Length: 112
Length: 113
Image 1 (cartoon, each protein chain N blue to C red):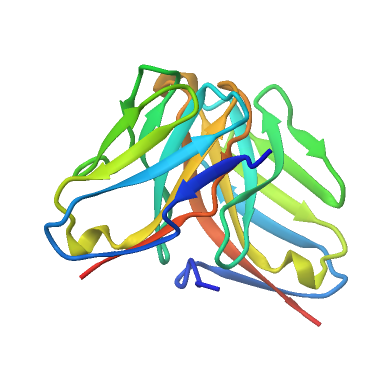
Image 2 (image 1 turned 30 degrees about the vertical axis):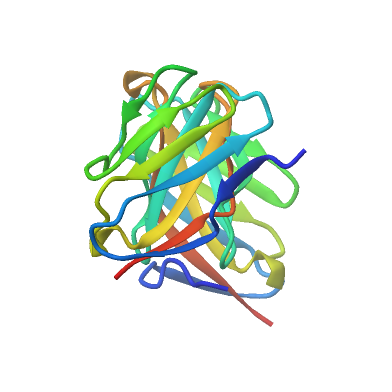
């Protein structure tokens, strides 16, 4: 039981490049989340998926797109990376509305 | 590991003392609250949760207090240990926003030996 798995763990992109961050959970959870964490800013919600086939914007969705591919997987895409998107990205999942979320280990993204 | 929360407020306590970490939440409709611990280079880890129909909940060495009147949450850690050194975040869910999990600002806890 791996929990929440994110790939890659580290990535360096040039400005304007695109990439997809992958996230998979093996806990049969309905809800999945993508957050970014900048130093001193805490975690900010980018996108949220309450269930397979649904997605919803969070606090900072601009510059990102998501896909809830199936119940297990929730990917985050940067179409044209900008230096302002340099951050640590966390994926999380929770079983239900009133339960805690479990987090992956993060993807450290640098855009130069 | 990578340092997160370089500019977060810091609470420094002596090993063995009790720690109290505070959080003001944003939405009066929120009905579920969670405290997370984040160590350097790692993802947040669940500590304890509380629902809005309660005002206190205890775990192992930790207690969460909820004051809905002033929208305030606190985490008390008894007999603080060096392994408790980390950044602590509160988070809330509310039905008005589809139960998205929204984080508050964090606090860095430093335990002095």
